[in-house]
Image 1 (cartoon, rainbow, N blue to C red):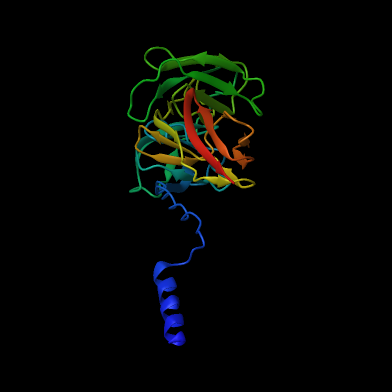
Image 2 (cartoon, helix red, strand yellow):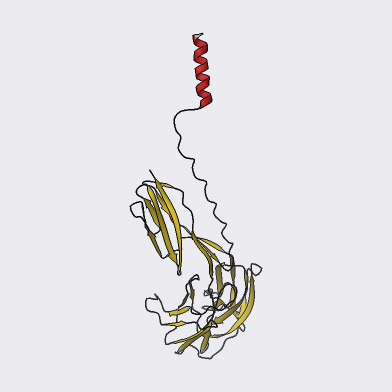
Length: 293
């Protein structure tokens, strides 16, 4: 009888489960949206008369989603552009002593493109240099009020800064050849591209400035005291692309005693809740964060 009673108690304990409390189930990982595919364009620039490669020739998208992207050919005339987005755009090719040629390129259909340019004896490298162009968003709408900075070398002191008009156009004249054009406006992704080499008295600089349609912060599951986490922002642009990364210029925590944040790294300090705020391109997003013991 004693053995039967012992067996009954054992079975009853197994059926009721352990009396030891269990911790919370681990949070379900948040799936990461797929990263948009990019494409490459490569080829060679040659002299139309000699057939030899043309070095230091600029190969630049002037319109379309890749507007402003520039490659410079090597000593053999070969060039390569990587991380391009799918779509069509007008490509202009110009050499220091060659006339410009243009062709429409469609990616990913055109993975390679060779260009033939005609030599010219015209002198086109004498100051002043005038750059003019248009800033569009990814859907082809003019972007007014965008700041266009013409930069030489480090860019600590821009050669000039102008603001686009209501039709998105701008004109700027400088005394030194610019190496970079930087364009920014609140609510858009800032763009910095290599400036085209001046080959005439007026050089075209057209830029696509993607407009931000949504800006938010990715959720972070409750942190335990002493844990760290990276703050990740999600940016959706008008071309339908989603980017995830450290897209913010400033971050704050409403309760530093609970969690602090520096350079995008969150440190959990004490149990409680706090609101993490991030800003980017004039936009603001918040995240409620819980810290547990």
